[in-house]
Length: 201
Image (tube, rainbow, N blue to C red; front, side, top):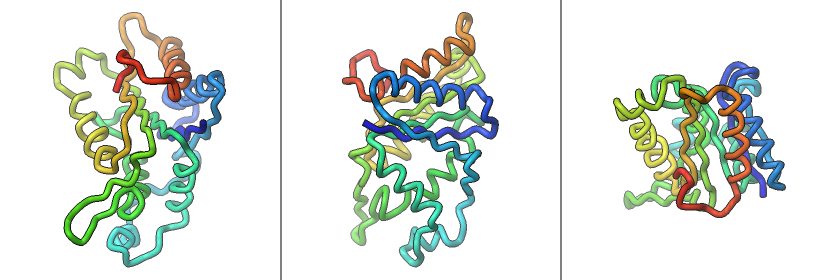
């Protein structure tokens, strides 16, 4: 099985990028293949342009950069998004990637009668957010629940893509970078494992 790991962080030496690499290592340990899409290093343009609006309205052709991303997703049996939490959500680079790639006619289909056909039911999603605040902060303000409503349900639910994992890795009293990297490897090994009741979804 093959995974596309999408990482969104401007620094290749960041903890986010390291966790993404560890997820890949875990996948390899479990006998699976993977590709890492480093949006910052690859120079993906997240700006939703007038042409993107025209594509949404079926009045223009999809940008080749966007088509290439859709093709990469099409080759994957699972999509893994690894990102730092900025203002209790995705970084703008990752949000722009979703805005431009998960488009009408590809991720979903808006029908003339108002129905929405969800087109990504075949694509399991694994979300790995890297937070700087502790879990008490997320729990006290309901931030992670709000993120799951917006991202898991609002984005991927709209496209019909099942979210198999929605995990928040944050520093704790006994959790440092090494423990977070090991969590990445554990996540990678579990991507294609049969789901259990203990798995975060």
